Image (cartoon, rainbow, N blue to C red; front, top):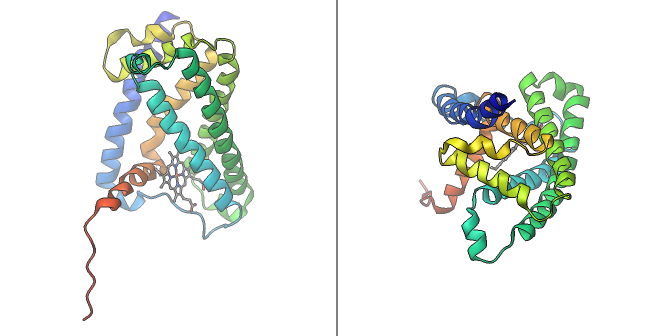
Length: 227
Ligand code: HEM
């Protein structure tokens, strides 16, 4: 059991991150024509606007919530006087609200992709896999909220934070922090890490471009002159 834990939470995260970064780089270098969000608006317009907006607002909030929530060092929260319990409640509330928003949007997106004959026929198995993968990860994440209700003092959340911070700072004993957390956290983390592993092989690469488009805010003016 310990070896299992050490592999999945001590070594596997690095396998996923390596494939995520290196795979994205190779895909960008070798297959730029396939680097796109692969919009399906022209194939089937129905439910796209509502589903897509709900999903993206929810998932982006959850993504940044995880990033800041897991990676902000504990000393910072202590320094600004935010107790572990308050942070735990805030995480459950925000994760719950935006997670549900993403879930409703995702269900609409899944419905249209699988129910519209034209859209389904023009989708690759990867397009479908990615939607179902996010659905499973999201459902597991939402279920962990019920587990967290049992320890609102935040001590379990601190273990998850310690694990994530040890992983990104390459400290060896990371997996020990997850040894006795609830199985739902482990499954959610496994699905989340594996999402990074499959990311470069799917349309998910558009997320890189989504974030990179922020540079448009400071780009040079485009000068257009009359002939
Ligand atoms: C960084 C900002 C992002 C931008 C600008 C963006 C933009 C887009 C666009 C334009 C589409 C195509 C919609 C259409 O069919 O017309 C799309 C689809 C999609 N995006 Fe994003 N996205 C972003 C982040 C994310 C994130 C963080 C995730 C998930 C972790 C995600 C997951 C998806 C999925 C699963 C689809 C396919 C939905 C479908 O089946 O139609 N996106 N995105």
